[in-house]
Length: 124
Image (cartoon, rainbow, N blue to C red; front, side, top):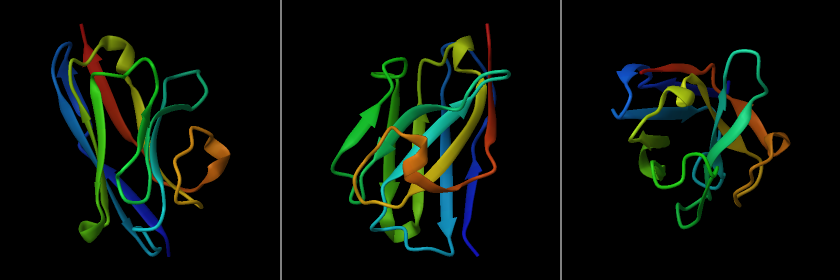
């Protein structure tokens, strides 16, 4: 059974930092691109960041460039999202996702497996 489990969300003040983790089990991790998406209340799920199979290539939404860093540890089947200089508009549920391909994509349909999400709340 494929499982993606996110952790690390919480409540933080504006300007603070959080580090999200996503542990993958039940499927091959090291060959697959991975991504983070967010969904704010009443809005569509949107792309945040993605990383290719070996961590050599990354992509970010314009809204998080320079503040968020995506990384992965294939030996631990784990992906991370370091979030710095958080803003109230970053408040959302954050989901990790595993792609069916080794190369990064910003498109939701490229991702076949999803976690349950972790809440990030940034207070002003």
